[in-house]
Amino acid sequence: IAEPPSPKVLGSIGKDHFLAKFSEWHGVVPDRFYYRRSEYVFEGIPFVIEAACSEVESECGELFHLLNFSPTFDDPLSNTRLAAGDVSSYGFYNFMRSCYVNPLGKDWAGIKQNVVVALHIVSPAFEFLDRGKTRVSLPAEVADEVANVLWAVGKSFYKEGKRRERDAVRQQKIEEERRRTKND
Image (cartoon, rainbow, N blue to C red; front, side):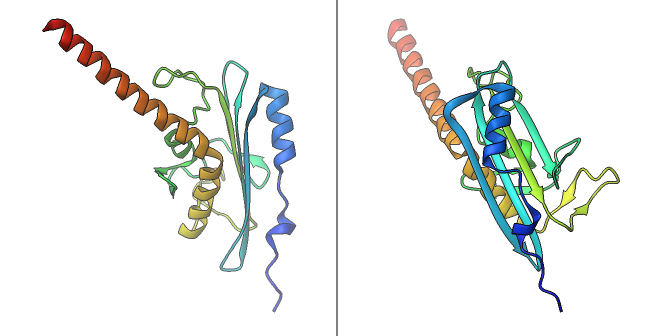
């Protein structure tokens, strides 16, 4: 019986390539680029999972999702529960939004933050859920590994977003107290 292939033979896009392309297309904000790669084997099937996320200088961000080096038309994990760190959500896009990563450049809670984010998963044996080979079904253990990779690149944004929320609540309480004392 042959040994199952190692994830290393699958290849990856790599940190340097993501950084170069994000810089070329959008201008990466210094010290705001994050990358994580994981090699994972589930029941003899190898997976390479990589994610890159960066705040960028351009007017809007962008969201990329790729399977086996090819972009997909829609979020390949839209029906997949992803949970890691303090975030739990369905799908790649919603997970990153829960991390306060705003790849579509919309004003969010008074903050305009342009971010480019990419998720790339490589495997020789995806179980596709549609004929267009866009959405995949991942075993729960693989989905957990995907979530851990996404959490690694989104954690800094999450902490900043939570801090902004706390500051906004604190400021609102201060303003309410000022109004109350002014009316007294």
